[in-house]
Image 1 (tube, rainbow, N blue to C red):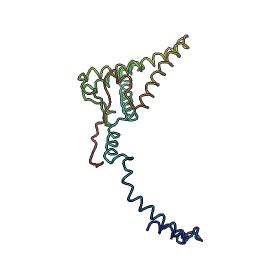
Image 2: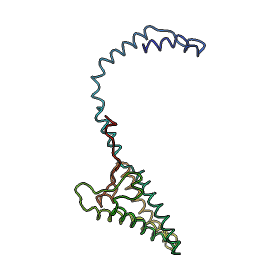
Image 3: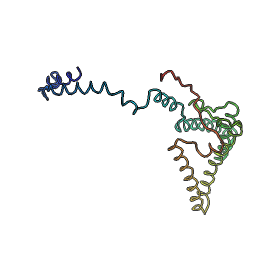
Image 4: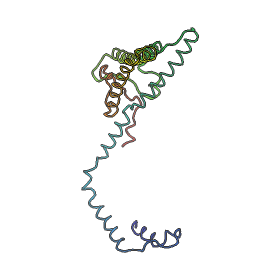
Length: 222
């Protein structure tokens, strides 16, 4: 019926849309197309081993949905950064104090550490449904969290200190090279982590990683 539909469509000039038939009705096409469909119907099961099973496809979908993308992590950090920056500026304006970059970093990472120790999440992570947890079998959650954010604090602060020296010292060329090399190492580690979908170096050191807190409805894939 499908092959006959195509042949009739060619013969009837697309049912009046086209002024003339653009092809002839060929009974050989009808027979060969039908024969090909019949042969395919009887032999397709013998070639299914080339394709993944439905169970494997479902399992891959579930694993993919459980992964925490770097986009979600960056978005969560952006939310926490914005909240901290807003509150810190209000406090500093009330106290009539200057909010330096290092002071802000101290407040930011202090907030991140305290939030994880008290609530197991930050506001940003809660909104995107992710949280930190230690690798299986590692019991020192508090120590892991403190180490993780202390490493990030050192990285952020180092970049900003080097940037300060580049802008305000005579030996700015040397500091610029050091800053560039420092950022290059971080960029390479990040690119490798993104490409291979592996943890970054500070996650390996602190034995922590992000997990999805949103429950996956497995029945959707059944």
